[in-house]
Length: 267
Ligand SMILES: C[S@@+](CC[C@H](N)C(=O)[O-])C[C@H]1O[C@@H](n2cnc3c(N)ncnc32)[C@H](O)[C@@H]1O
Image 1 (cartoon, protein in one colour):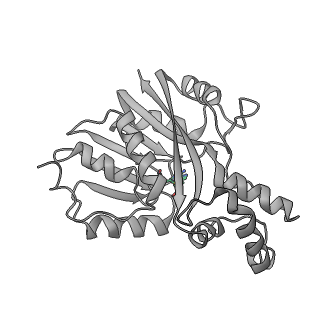
Image 2: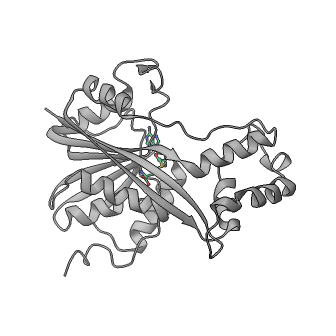
Image 3: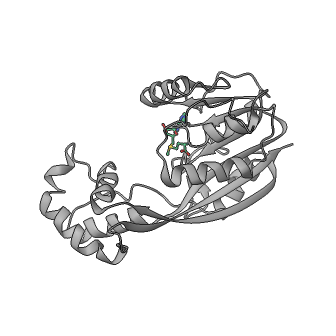
């Protein structure tokens, strides 16, 4: 029978590698039926939905999200699919309104800790520990697990950054790779023990060059309000020529994305 009573329809997420990594994070957290769990930074729900499946039918999941847009979108999707044990709240994870020791486990998928921790120098930028980890520890029950995913490699973004730089376009990298050494420090200083790591790489195929380009253009590469003035049709044509080495037989574009999963226990 499985958990078919939880989702009457399959929820729409960002799909692809988001769903693959979301499921791995939920497995890594060892979530069990009946538990009350938090999804920090839900986005389109690639972590929230597998969490809701795992804790069902007697448990439930709360997602928090600072973007009003994603609260609305994902709430509508939860309702559309008839998922009764999940909700999403508009809340900043640095100042959560939950009481202390609320959740059995907390997941945080691809939030990015670069604003708080310098992963090259392996030191905090401002406060130690940072406000997100402090809040997560506060709302987690003793013995509960905090698990997160973060990027080690996004080869498609690395390619695009290198390509645009080669076109003399000053651009952002669009992500900061984090690492195990940094996360060991953050977890230890944040008061977590039994720290464990897992890395997983997926080879991801965009179905066509157009789909790959559309995804790349969703990122803000330049400081300009309108990237189109710099990333023109000609630049796109050039990119399509240079991307050939990543194209597979059926015309898709294949890249590797590698994620690091980190888990620690609140004593
Ligand atoms: C890259 S998305 C990942 C979404 C989802 N966790 C996943 O793995 O598919 C990160 C999300 O976290 C949200 N976020 C980042 N910092 C946050 C904070 N301090 N409080 C609440 N949400 C936050 C962002 O708005 C964004 O929707």
